[in-house]
Length: 232
Image 1 (spheres, rainbow, N blue to C red):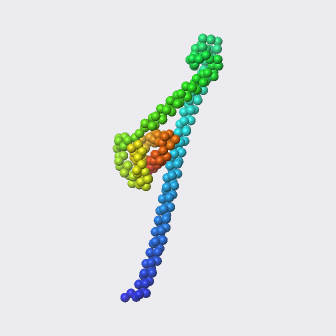
Image 2: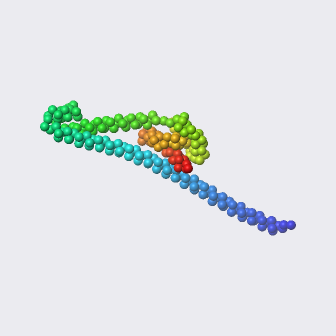
Image 3: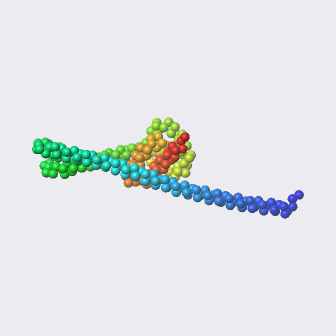
């Protein structure tokens, strides 16, 4: 038969184990909180990097376009100078050459030609930019489009909701152009970087978009890339 002392000893041991258990739980809970905080910080950093990448891509596209136009201007200017040299002994040919560049009286043919070309190139550039902005503004993706391009879109959507439940909850009530966060991720899986770039232009804060919409687009892109990276 157990004595009072033995029972008390057992109770003391249980109490010590309970204290140790509580301390271990506290450490585990704190670790979870630390990891959640770190995850949020990493996600914010990822969003910043994605946005920076989009800006750099945009800048590179603009610079490449300008470079191409400058090369064309230089080429046309060189052609004009060569024609001007070849036609120096024939005033009729010179007049024809000048009139093809401008309808006004030309005294300094090289300067007028360069001005004419620059004006035309600037007009073409402005028209191209306006067309691109209009195209991006009209660009949209529907769930039906996604399902048509990706037959297992519904299954992927469900997988991503389960895998990125925290992010899904953050943007759960935020719908952009008919799609939520996860549907955008599935769309980027289906249509690739071009769709992300177009949506990035469309909703960029500097182009009549919003910070929150841009964050959703960037987060969806990151999710899509993680999904594709995990594929065997």
